[in-house]
Length: 255
Ligand SMILES: Nc1ncnc2c1ncn2[C@@H]1O[C@H](COP(=O)(O)OP(=O)(O)OP(=O)(O)O)[C@@H](O)[C@H]1O
Ligand SMILES: [Mg+2]
Image (cartoon, rainbow, N blue to C red; front, top):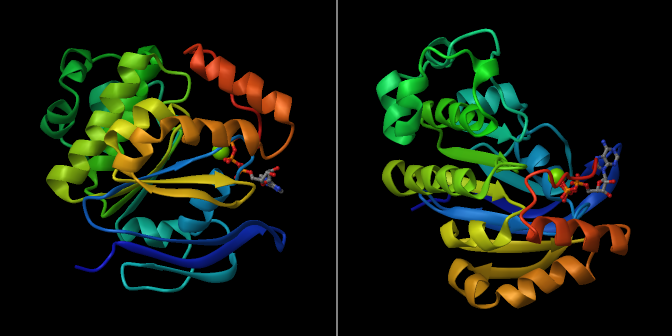
């Protein structure tokens, strides 16, 4: 079986200045890779490069048999979906119409998230944050992507909702063979749904573990957040503490 995406020695950054160095991994169909690491470690930068939004400085990314760094709209046609914490919801339209213009059937959305069933006539803007993000994910998965890129999908949402979103991602991997690369702040939770974990520190691979190893070595994984802050260490610690407190308002600093 060929990997859905294969990354070899990737170096990427902004205006020719590298931020991510020598990153390599493959993601097979049905596999979930979780990127972890402190603020500024280079997780979003990695995702942007994989989506074709940032040019590579070195190395290569092969997706769908194509090595070139095609822009996102071309990759979308090619089976890549990219979701972030910014919910892509039309606020004035009902949930039903939001699904329709996303070309996702109501049945498909309800199969993923039964709780959306009784909210079909509610306008996007009146849905809760969790419901909006379920809609966003239903639309992304409804396109049956071969690769889902999810960057902090569950940022700021209640723990129960975080699990619902992560379960849906896991199911897409198990049942549709979707390859997944996700960035999650909730390391503890995310690792329950992960086959492969890479902890980044300062733009490089700090730890590269199977999901099982990452779950048993969770202490070490969390330590990496404290000892390898991308920037201000005290800010990193404060952020970690906020996340641990499970504060739904825990904000992430601008990258
Ligand atoms: N548009 C940009 N121009 C220049 N440098 C940037 C830009 N965006 C991010 N960076 C820098 O790249 C590095 C990695 O940032 P990135 O956003 O990838 O981190 P991250 O791991 O996603 O962090 P967070 O957990 O805060 O989301 C940081 O040093 C950041 O300052
Ligand atoms: Mg980020």
